[in-house]
Length: 94
Image 1 (cartoon, rainbow, N blue to C red):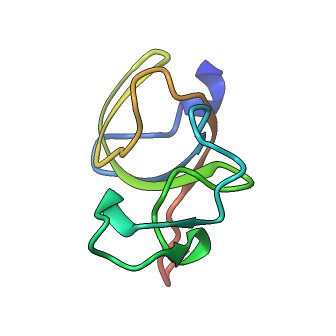
Image 2: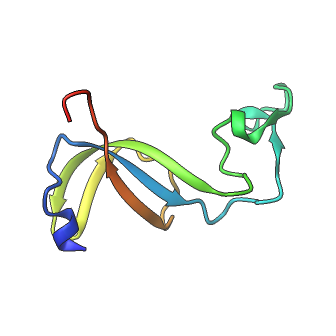
């Protein structure tokens, strides 16, 4: 993996795809933000981790790269969540 991470640098914005391994795959509607005062809403209209295909998509900023460790900000995942892929955020000039 080190060769694949070779061009990442502090300040880069990337998408991290995760497998939300703790998700309940049978849930199709939730109260957004687990607030029962909010109406039940289909999971595809929410940021709920519970969904039939629990792929997480996180736009993060790279803070540092040290070998196989990449430190980021903005990742919304619990410790131990498997990372499936990392993709660059492309702007209009790329």
